[in-house]
Length: 358
Ligand SMILES: *Cc1c(COP(=O)(O)O)cnc(C)c1O
Image 1 (cartoon, helix red, strand yellow):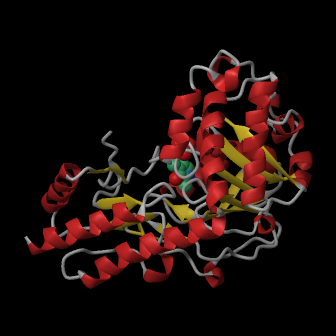
Image 2 (cartoon, rainbow, N blue to C red):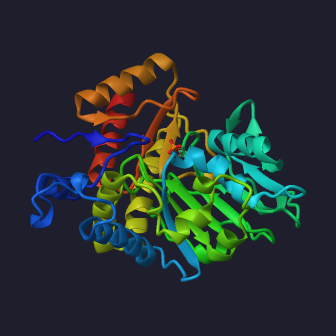
């Protein structure tokens, strides 16, 4: 079997053990004579999988009891709208910290629902190269909430510490959830599309304080209320059972490793690649300010677009895929999510050295 070194930004590489388990169980799930895809979402077999996924998340992130864990659909992008629909009542305003394309989208969607303001932005010439300092944030103490994007998937920046806000803190953690330790209690709501770090596409994890769920607006469609899904354990309507099943498999592998070891491995991988970039700064250019560098998405440029294309092609010949930068930014992007091995990063660095020499 020829598995590649997968640097995709999302959907991204998954742990082989999680996929193999799916393969083993796909036709006949635990001796039930049918696939998990064919089970009712209201039956015991599926519900055990669903609850196990929630319980792994609760354990891995030490989620306090006064938080609900929801599995929703529509991606992180739908949450850009659903968050203000629930949490931004008329007469209130929400603060957005803009650090990249995803936070721009979240802010624009909030503006369609109610009143939102930019508490800070680090954009310069359409580029984002850093996370703002806490002192740069112009926060409204009466805001309904403050929204941040913990890891900027496109530009490769990441919050290392989170601002202390008076208003409830909401974070889009799509591209670094379970990549490092966080204090859930510092946040009112955390959301993440699963397809970067913890599973396939099709399911979005929302971790939200119960008091916010209860206080959510009631003048919106039932399907968009957090309360609807919290009361029904995310089984109000048919959930994406196969996506949740595979996420469960991934979470089971992460639970075996533990979050401290996952974080250490991610830091080691990122440090290796950034050290190589710094050492070869005469050739590779890493645009992100050092204090803001993401451990998940490492972006860099070569002297020309032609050379960037050649590096991507040379990498593919050595089974390294997914290295082309986002279509809006260009350049190279190596996504180093949990499932990417240290060996993959070592291979990449080796190629970068040889490429520069040549
Ligand atoms: C990928 C990504 C999104 C969009 O996710 P969808 O599930 O495709 O809607 C939003 N925010 C961040 C930070 C992302 O990385």
